[in-house]
Length: 116
Image (cartoon, rainbow, N blue to C red; front, side, top):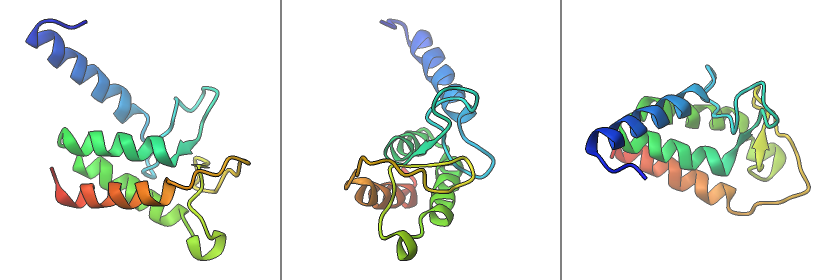
């Protein structure tokens, strides 16, 4: 447990560094570092991370993620927002359907526009 204000600030800065290191140039936010076991952009996780980035003032990073998703999500072709995408933005299809992805994506986009 972090008890001091300085400790909390240090923890926030370290967390911010880790999260920002997971964002790719194209805007995707990886679940783990590229060389780890899950080099994918998971819609649900990335929306939550983008909301946190937005909250601490990194609206530009948050917006970059939504630009990535706008390019990756082709609902007119695929008829759904997938659970995960590859680093290049292609759907990485699993048998697990997550029906909340589209709604979460919309909520995340809206919170990004609010510029908390």
